[in-house]
Length: 290
Image (cartoon, rainbow, N blue to C red; front, top):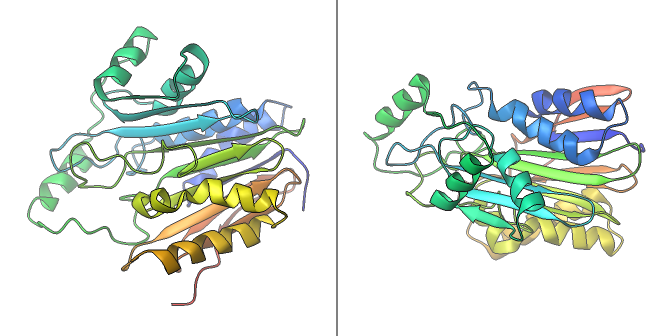
């Protein structure tokens, strides 16, 4: 166990997220600024094909982005089906801070982003378009576990002042139906923060987390006395017991106000990155026995 500052992020791309977040946290910065910076680092890198610029498109060849940001007081902002803006996490923060709403979607989200001064650009890279055209040959859009076709970046932080925050951002499931929204922009599904207790997020096939409100469930378990690890394990077991998971993957990550971290997944392959004053590592998560 460690006190803040501390940042943990999902998957191998979590290391890039943590590096950006740590630049702020290590200087006494605020957790909300840190998680936004972490998500932005992944959003802008086209080598991460499940988030932001370079994200893999839907069946129609459109890159649509979802994001959610939440602070220690429970304030949150989200966007879904956002096109042509590289940093949906920053648009989500503007929704939180500059509107009376929690979520804007589609054309409305884009209009708001442009009014706020965000640049409009083509997010479909050559590589992503190539992948999309190849996918048209296959009518089975079944997701494959542990590939970056559907791997949200979730960033959870505890700053030196004890404030928790979380952010998540994704281009969603590759080859998804036009208009599909996953768990990432849904408070309580893809991410949830309770500043008195902890923060949790989910990644993988979003429908699994949406049906179970997995992130809210984990935070509530921590409020009731569970450790982050116990909360993660119970959340995954609930999904496995209540839903037909097929061969899908869902990984969850949790951080409590004491600086304890937990992770768990349906199956092997989920990883997460941790950054503290003494550690910068990517860890394999524990998982359900298959």
